[in-house]
Picture 1 (tube, rainbow, N blue to C red):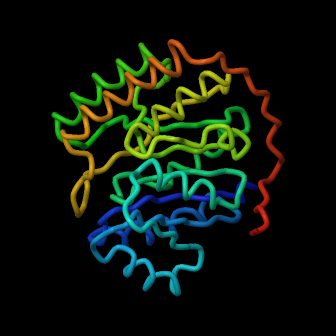
Picture 2 (spheres, one colour):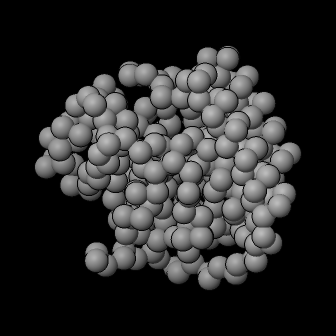
Picture 3 (cartoon, rainbow, N blue to C red):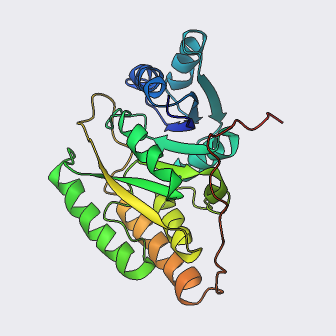
Length: 253
């Protein structure tokens, strides 16, 4: 086995159409790459049957736990809830829409011996051209103003060492969360590695990232740049401990 243990966070909002498959794929893929793992589904105040479906799946999905928000708090808040509940020394996340092949987590996690953050980029992105166009412009802006260092900040397949993640827990409640965390990582001096990952068409449900989110996220980026990067206090670099040979679970409180 790999000697690696992983907590996988899956934020979900009104994903009843695909959540069964998301849990099944995680339960099937992760034992191929990790000695121990857990799957944390964070239901972010869904108004459909997402939470009910996960509740029905849990008795047959031994590594899966359900965490709930009521009411909806936002994508970033759902990620933070999952990160704070994770028990293992490697923490990853993906979306509930099943657009990523979770077998790629094995490659990403293996690189955490050298890099505290290993982030995917969608090498052959299957989203509509309009989303790809806006995403390319957003990533150019984020790299130029915030120094995110990556080509695909919002790719929803990333792995963190817990020691690094403790310094990166997001304040953003919405979709700016990835850009915030990557900027913090750069400010703290954390090296990262970006690796290509498989991307698939969405198989059901609807994307929660609409064109109406673009101006909100752009405003968040510019505000963060002004307050935190341009005129914010200097951030001291953090030296991270070397990872242990094998990750161990944290005892539950």
